[in-house]
Length: 180
Image 1 (cartoon, one colour):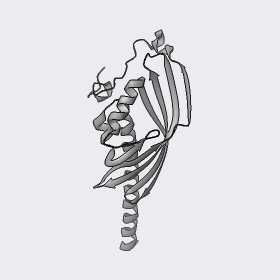
Image 2 (spheres, helix red, strand yellow):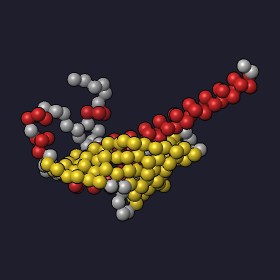
Image 3 (cartoon, one colour):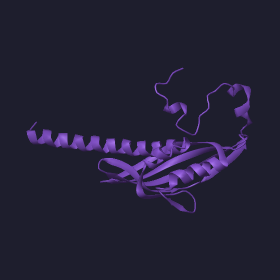
Image 4 (cartoon, one colour):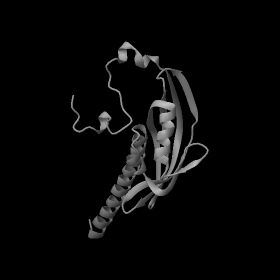
């Protein structure tokens, strides 16, 4: 094996590792953004967007600087709890720009806790990498299917005693270490 071949192999390996790291960093941003909204953590949600970006949830795109608070207000006015579950994720990286499509299933509990809506859709994100950090520049969202049903099971004996999440930094997921 010549030095040139070893150098080429190392360069190829370095490029592959960087690509995998970028993909993971991008997915981490998308997951962190959902967690921020589910916990109503405006600081966490805002950290996922470039300030000049925007999020199009419905008919009006919101500037990234306003979106975290507007999303929290909308969820709080309409639902007592919400969860975003991310599924299929496609990521095309072109230099310092990435184009992603991520499937999402949202679970939305009514204010009285008696009805649950499950809605599915997709996020189409354009992310940019600046100074080694990936963030969302533009997000477009779809809603493509939904169903609504009785959520009274949540108040039944089989669920009694289960922990419940909160929409703030007092949520169990923020506590370190996890202690039982």
